[in-house]
Image 1 (tube, rainbow, N blue to C red):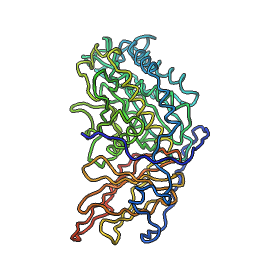
Image 2 (spheres, rainbow, N blue to C red):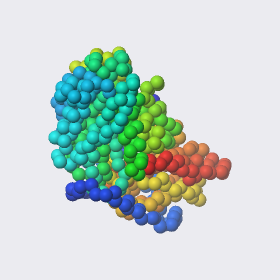
Image 3 (cartoon, rainbow, N blue to C red):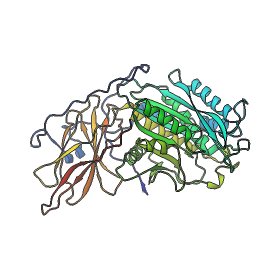
Image 4 (spheres, one colour):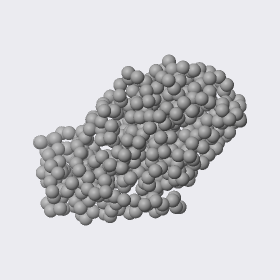
Length: 470
């Protein structure tokens, strides 16, 4: 278990304005400009120089965006409590519970979610019902995911998915009538999505964000399975998926959040978890991230597993310490949650989504070539015309923490790294920055195995590629 802390910050350049556009048919991605052939002795930029922030490099860097900070300051504790309390009031949201009553059961709950999203979406959220059949315990039913899409105005076709399941259960997994308030599991996750949707729909973003409220999770992630399969069949690209499940906290537990991501340490899911750690360090430095290199808790599961099975970088967010005695029973009530903790979880989600959706997509992994001097390597990658600069990260094998340096767009695409420790294995990756100082998703990592001082062989450029999310 490792805890992320704040990382190096430099000042951003200038404010970037944006307009509003509705979702058009899937646009073609912009083809990045390829860099010129490597010229280590001429145009390259030394990694040590990047660390100094010299005038030649410019002042581009990862910085708190004032617009994102304003969104975070508008997170409403009162709203979060109201969302949790409303879902609790339906008595049960079990998959087999009634669908006709207006105030009891899963039918009433999903109608409330649909209506509330329509109300808070500032006419920008496209809310729809994603229906699928499910037979459970011998009973045929029709289940509904509730999907709210915030269309991006940029050309990148990839989408970002944030999810939470809204169904609940008690001790008897087949009981569709008994009380199952499900405040922490998982009205808390639904509340995070609701508040994030309210805030983010007040702005326009380059990339499309999908808020997915999943059904039938408690019986086996049937809702997310159906949703992911539909996206795959439609040829959609999912850049990242974040599952909020049991995130309500309670007074006295550590002010941190567990992020579950399957390994190895350079897997796409771990890269996403590390990204969330960087965002937390910038926007919520007192609310830390604890990466758990595992798909989920032992013997447990969540909707993120369906995305992971489809090759999508996906993680689960869960409170630092769970009260298993108040799960799947009538004791899971709204009065036990810590709503200041839930505010912090919402801050992380909103800050991460705003950075992802407001910046160019993740670049491809850099190509690494050894230079004449031992421990020196030349990094090359295709520059994206939408990027104001890049973060270059070098992470020692066995650590989740990476040294981060910044390079402006003018110098990007051809960067020399010097002085790497002999005999050390590094994982090198990139992230695009925009002019506000927002940071995009990390690229896949390239492994650099530095030769030893006696001149032993070097293996540079072995690339870890992401599993396709198409």
